[in-house]
Length: 367
Image 1 (cartoon, rainbow, N blue to C red):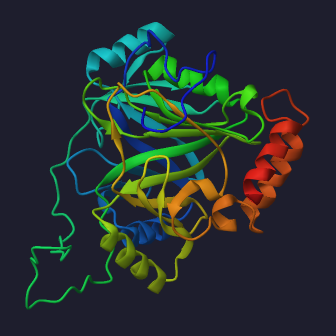
Image 2 (image 1 turned 45 degrees about the vertical axis):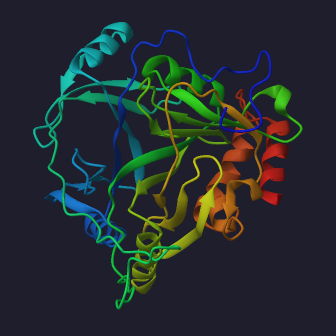
């Protein structure tokens, strides 16, 4: 165990015994946005590099070798389209397609490779891809020489991290909200072979089961990110945020200064999370979507069982400022108004988000 509190007898095990396949990693996220010029300007300030630019599409990447981290296509409105996960081999794409009755298709020439496109229980497309083009690594952020204790390595020299973009290394994870959380969780575990690192539950409602999970890839003895996907119960099916790894705390802080100087909106941070341990900093893109810089996250192999903890706002971080109203989604905004409408609508439907769950969520925001 990596925490003091584990699962109780009969609680969700956080994995399935015989998944169809086990995905290797997250590959990329896809969005539509009406203004690609504005989207690219923020992406460059946030620390991405552009690998493809057309009037209808941009591809964004990090410095590590790999495919794109984000694909943005022109659309009438800002929308999260879906997630692509990387299969360990072409054979896994074919196996998944055969097991689900879907066809394998070729990805566009700008990507290369093959894919099978499924639909999760919320109705969102999920691609599993392989054989896509891999770009060579780019030069990374300039590293610093630190004087931590002894010996002193930096002598007769100063430390001056410049205000510049925090260069994205790679896509780390995406967080999704679902009205039927358990159904969606089990679908991802069954179809993609993901396993749960941590469960959260509403205080006083543990007997009803978890309401959030931090989910990692199962690569056996090879350590992987504490979470590649996180999923939470809520009144609507939506994107919550996505997270991108950068080199260190200096990159996060100086990169934040760079974003502030260009007028972009900060949401919450800098701090260190509990589940996943990563140093974090959250920003809003020009369309209001939440994105995270992170560094120094936990890496787990498949041997660890899920941890369990109550969900509280104060329990989101080991240190750092209190979770902001913007991050919690309770600050006045178009998005919070939409979520309020979703609450009223969800309570009238047959799903997992009922009046008791709403009370639990309200306690989280007040905690």
